[in-house]
Amino acid sequence: MLAGKFFVFLTVSLTSCLGLLAFFEAKLVQEEGLVLFNTYSVLLLLWELKKYNLPGALPPQLVKLPHLQVVDFAYNYLSGTIPREWASMQLTSITLLVNRLSGEIPKELGNITTLTYLSLEANQISGIIPPDLGKLINLQTLMLSSNRFTGNLPVSFSGLINLTDLINDNNFSGTIPIFIQNWKKLERLEMHATGLEGPIPSNIYLLNNLVEL
Image 1: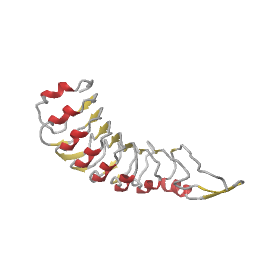
Image 2 (image 1 turned 180 degrees about the horizontal axis):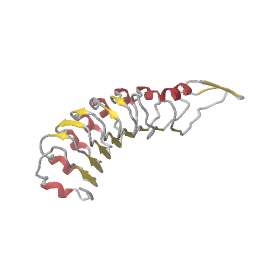
Image 3 (image 1 turned 45 degrees about the vertical axis):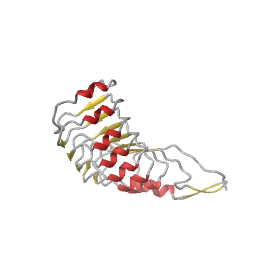
Image 4 (image 1 turned 90 degrees about the vertical axis):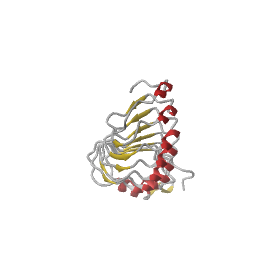
C-alpha cells in the first residue's frame, strides 16, 4: 500500500462535473497496491469550465472537494440558482458571469470569508443584496452588473474595507451611500445606471487610490 497522500493540482476543463467527482471516488490498482482517489487524496484547487456553452445547473456536489479554491463557470448557458451548499467551502474566487442564473444571492455566501473575488455579472439574478455579504472582509473584487437587483446597497458593505474593484449597474434605490469612504483601497468604482441618486458624497476625496470612476 502506498503511504501518504497524493496531492495533485488540476485544472478541470471539458469534463463532466459529476463524472469527475465519480472518478475521484474510484479505486485505482497500481503495482505498489490499492490507491483510493477520494476528496482527501486529491488536492483540487481550480475548477475551470468557461466558454464551453454548457447547459444545466451549478453543481452543489463541489462541496465534496474541500480543498477547492477557485470556481470559474463564466460564459456558459447555466441556469437555476447559486448553490447554498458552496457556503461551507473555503473558496477564494467565484466567477459566474454571462450565464442564465436566476433567483437571489444565497445569504449563506457571506460565510465564505476567504473569498477575494466574486463576479456575478450578466445573469438574471434578482432581489436584494443580502447584508450577509458584508461579512466578506477579504473581498477585493465585486462585480454585480447587468442583473435585476433591487433595494439599497446594504449598510454592512461599509465593512468591505479591502475592496479594490466594484462594478455595479442594476435597479437599486436610494442615494449613493456615504460609507464608500471606508473603501480606501478602491481603485475602480463603476456605478452608472444603478438607480442610485446623487449627489456624489463629498467624502469621496478620501479614496486616494481611486483611478477609475
